[in-house]
Amino acid sequence: MAREGAPIVVKADGLAAGKGVTVAATTAEAQAALDAIFAEGPGARVVIEEFMTGEEASLFVLADGEECLVLGTAQDHKRAFDGDEGPNTGGMGAYSPAPVMTPAVTEAAMARILRPTLAEMVRRGTPFRGLLYAGLMVEAGNPRLVEYNVRFGDPEAQALAMRLGAQLLDVCHAAAEGRLAEARINFAEDHALCVVMAARGYPGAFARGEAIALPEIDDPRVRIFHAGTRRADATLVSNGGRVLNVTARAESLAAARDLAYAALDAVDWPGGFARRDIGWRALAE
Picture 1 (spheres, rainbow, N blue to C red):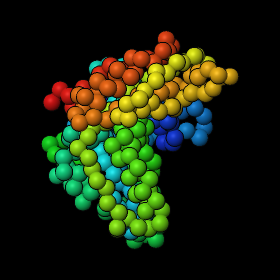
Picture 2 (cartoon, rainbow, N blue to C red):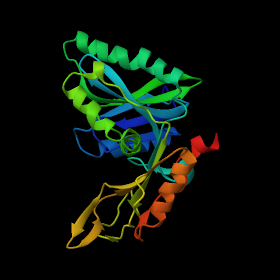
Picture 3 (tube, rainbow, N blue to C red):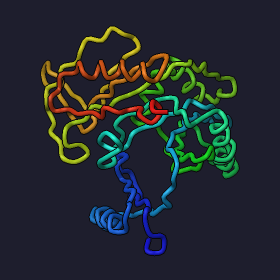
Picture 4 (spheres, rainbow, N blue to C red):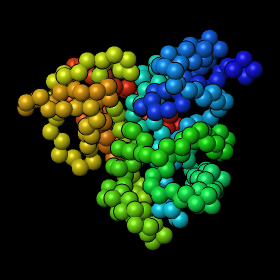
């Protein structure tokens, strides 16, 4: 780190619920992140990475050991507060598709990053079957790999699910049975946007067990996904940091945003908060 200087990226080498990354603007901040990781105990490990510039996006594919199928793209908002301020979180909102992932950029990522990865796993005798999520940094049309996850992103999954509908089950079934070569996805022109409602204090200390009253929603374009809730007798209560995912699908991103925030504003939960600027980057373009 002394050789590289700052900005630099410090990551906990292990599962951290999406919160184990510090983008350190100074060496002092990087040192503080290291101290926090190693304070977890003697088994703690750390990865130090180059700070990449550009625009982050996520590319999702399904693989069946031989074939792969693009599921879609998304962008999330990792910082806790509006304007991309505050600490990193597991994700405070997402939208799909990601404008930066043009067909040309998506094909470049598939040709130079994902397909070679999957082909190498086949060559090694360990073919991959399942969901592969590539976190990318895109600058001047050039995608670079930040990380892989073998899962859906959260809350990217909610936005993708709203766009894919029942097709998502069909293609997952095809991947499990090795039939992706015959699978197709009908990508609608719709956009989807998800806003996370979190408990005040998240990603730090937060209260649990607060009562939540949800609105009646009869619009099929709007869904409220539960992430951290439970039932206490007949009352719905909070039971986590990120608690609800208010998601909407519409013919434009602006319309999806308006639907999502209208539903969010109808949720009665004084102990919750949400960012009010999900989708700002794409909507500002």
